[in-house]
Image (cartoon, each protein chain N blue to C red):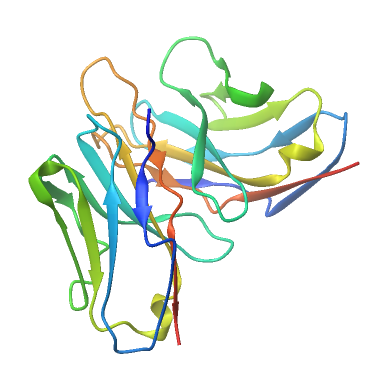
Amino acid sequence: EAGVVQSPRYKIIEKKQPVAFWCNPISGHNTLYWYRQNLGQGPELLIRYENEEAVDDSQLPKDRFSAERLKGVDSTLKIQPAELGDSAVYLCASSLLGQGVSYEQYFGPGTRLTVT
Amino acid sequence: AQSVAQPEDQVNVAEGNPLTVKCTYSVSGNPYLFWYVQYPNRGLQFLLKYITGDNLVKGSYGFEAEFNKSQTSFHLKKPSALVSDSALYFCAVRPYSSASKIIFGSGTRLSIRP
């Protein structure tokens, strides 16, 4: 079974430039998450989708960050314009939500963003 | 506020010795608890979970964790550490009120010396 796929793995951009990250979740998983992880810290949730609906985006800086989940499958996270403080690893995860099933999340390898 | 705490930034253990990585939580209702491991330049990997039932749960790579409701703890344990266990470990909790949101701790770096 293929895992969560993310691209690109690494991205270096200058501040004020736009950047986009792509995520393909595990087939059949109806819940998708975007996290930001700073060095030496735990992941912090940015946005959570259940199917196509963003059910929790309270931690997403909406002035510069946007996300979408097309047809309830793939997802894109965008930053425009990027700031120096956005340098971090952006993790995508997916899980299967439903009665009688477990709730663990499966993570992709992440995209390491460096803003210079 | 709902939260999870990992009180130790780093744990150092000699190979072959038992290891414990501590985790305490604060959520309303019955929690769902998880442990994840992260190797360098990799995403998080699921180790084990507690949903209900037996307080001692077994997971991948010989790890186990004990749920203690009275102490609101979910410590990760392994009877005999391997050098390859060296990694960053995260405890996580799913609040009862949320269908899918999981809150992560700040992580504990486990270092196993030969």
